[in-house]
Length: 96
Image 1: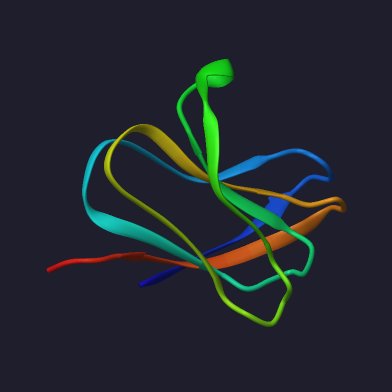
Image 2: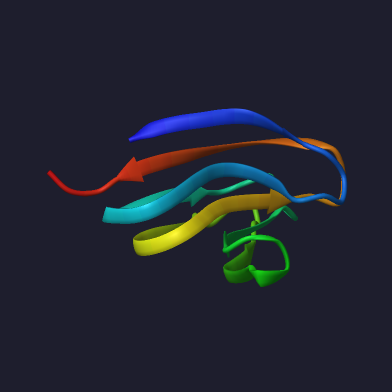
């Protein structure tokens, strides 16, 4: 498990934190806690053909997770904040 960040988030726009493509044989998991009010999600696909999954809002107290595995084409962990802030999260690749 590795800690990623801090990553600067601009107010109001989505920021890609980690990208994946192709076959993901073992799950990739991100563990997020704060700052409160930051929205996280997994975005699949490209442009207008993309879609969101696992959308959650951080509360600063409980740990929220995002997970990607299998054939994904193109996927990424993204975050957005209403104010300028920084985010740090833990990232884990499961398996042997």
